[in-house]
Length: 582
Image 1 (tube, helix red, strand yellow):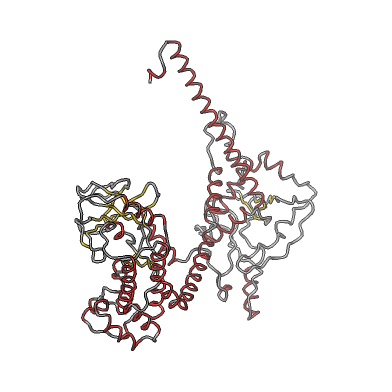
Image 2 (cartoon, helix red, strand yellow):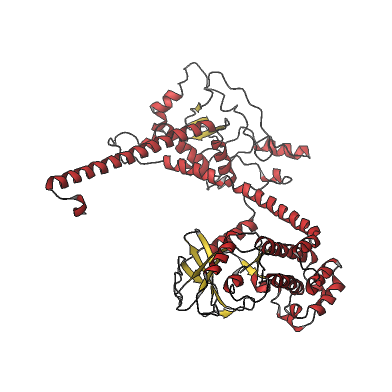
């Protein structure tokens, strides 16, 4: 028979009074209440406990003969009951894993594992408690794309103005002329210490050699102060001299895992031949969704900023998560061409509507030819789509529709469909967030538990006494740690059940009055406690660690002050000025 001297300590003996010689063993263990079934929502009836048994902790002094992994109900009876019923199986009974075999190490005999037989749950669907795998992978990809590392070999400067860790986003070593901006540009990804997030640095080479006037920077500040969900926000405009020319850096928000409309919808070389299969067009619902989002960008630029967009080109419209559109490089042409703009603002705004019609035709047909020959492709669109969308695009191309208010009214019916889609996505993401909300709370609970369990007392002078973590409440927490993380199956192999770990930790956090059985590592004693006891012991033990930590910090500060005072006294006694000594 194994002996556990720790369970014979004053802590255990004082907590559990000995049983008189003429009193039989308590039946509280064998008649304990059935554990609640989290899957079916069933709670077994509470069995009456003997009045002489302590209400919170019940010892089981079976001398190693009792193992809480054994079920008091024969498994054959449950199988027979499920087969005879021929209906809904009875989930009120629990099938417990049997005891660990004798060949297994004693410290693996920890607690009980509440597992229902898998064939009794074939007709029930248990909801998952973790984030959807597709969304989880998408978020991980965005985080991975946002990570900035110093480039190993790069011909570009690693710092541009106040921005660090500069990485090129394009393969070209020199700026290339942008078709939409009509200027040589080059893109970099960098880290902004001021914003504490990654940003995109777009290097622009203005045509004139003189620096930008102060009015241009004032206009850039107006763009930086305004924001809208449909555009990539401008953050800063900085002239740099690291390239040895008159380059100007436009700083925009970094959008991870995004592509341009041209890359996604207009990069098929087969469609550039001029043959247009009507069955290979963009779905009408998606086209309306794109048009509604681009209308919002026009409304923001024309009404909020009182400026034109000027960059409605497929290479400057970013797509994220399939159908989410963002207008990029807004305000760049206005700042660069601030003093040389020959056209009036009304003419520039009117061009935006024509550019919007051409852009929608190019996206629907998936070819840049539709933007160059809008009349020909519009006649084909009228044969495939209902009259609503072709008529609206015709009004945009001919200039009949030239105000934001009229465009908003024309797309209002489909804007509600887009709003419904956004609300559905918001609800879906909120549900996924709620599944992950408890991770931080459980993580803090695990940190507390591991800070207490099996902690060595390096400051203790008398090493003849047991360790602090091996006595009192800390020893009970050690057994609880084994109950949570060191479960084994009937063959003695590690039993890894994340649902068991999460469920138990949640009950501890909630200080549940539900009971559980803790078994010593040698298996000779079993103790019935509640999750509220575990919570109280953990808070008390961790609180003592926090108090000792604060006391140690105070002592360190006092020692530093004393050393500083002694140093000052020595300097004053020797006639040396402390400032000169430094």
